[in-house]
Image 1 (spheres, rainbow, N blue to C red):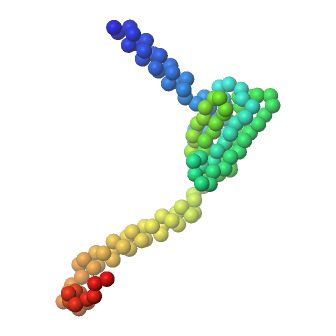
Image 2: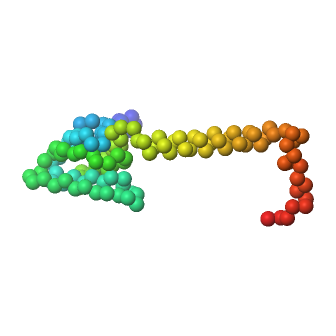
Image 3: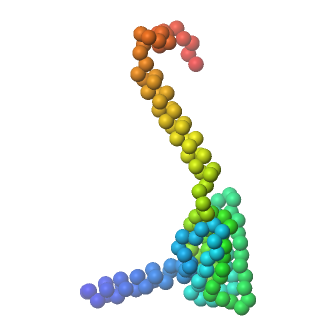
Amino acid sequence: MRKPILLLSVFCMSMAIAAQAQIQLSTEKPTEGEPITITLEKPAEMLVVTYRPNSAVTHWDTFRVQPATNRFEWTPDRAGIVALSVPEQGGKNVSVRFQGLSTSGIAVMIVAASLLFGGAAFAFRLLFKDEEEDGTLDIDLEHMPDT
């Protein structure tokens, strides 16, 4: 009984290893603007690079070589998710990092933080407002029109 289970588990593990994409990069964390080497298990004539796959702003680059080779030189020109694919060999998703700090990202974070903490400060000020000092909360809501 143990022998068939062991053979089945070895078979499943070998199929899982074979199903993985056979694309390797010279660096696992590529950076925008820095060249890297893509190594394939089998020689191929074409490599397709898809920037931001499955989005509305997808952009493709296709590298073709004659004769077929298993090494491609690639310089990512955009940061973000990139899908590397080779026909009949599979593909691999790679995250390309920004070359430096993103000023627009930092600006968005500062604006979001100021809105978040400003809103919290405003809410606490309303929550702990003293009604005797400020007569603005002495409004009779029963006589207000319904909106």
